[in-house]
Image (cartoon, rainbow, N blue to C red):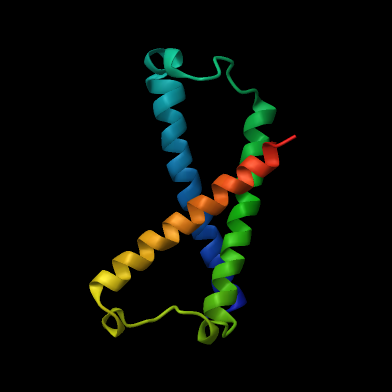
Length: 121
């Protein structure tokens, strides 16, 4: 069972993963290959420091929210009401692959329409 201490460890792990991946991406595209990539940018203007700070804060809040979901599902005994299973052999490999693909499609569809709704006037 996940405890409050484990939630903090999970959130810290997610933050570390975020900073490593975004840091490497920033390093590659804004420092190492910036002259080669600049003409491919949709928006030619470079972000200001306040833009970076805002994006990092929003990302950290998102990490805390997703860590909270994980804590609720796995640590607060909500798992019995979900379709999450521990043993991969409970279902076939095809079922597992299909469920992952379906989850990605559902998530991307939700994200697309929410994003459109946010920008709709």
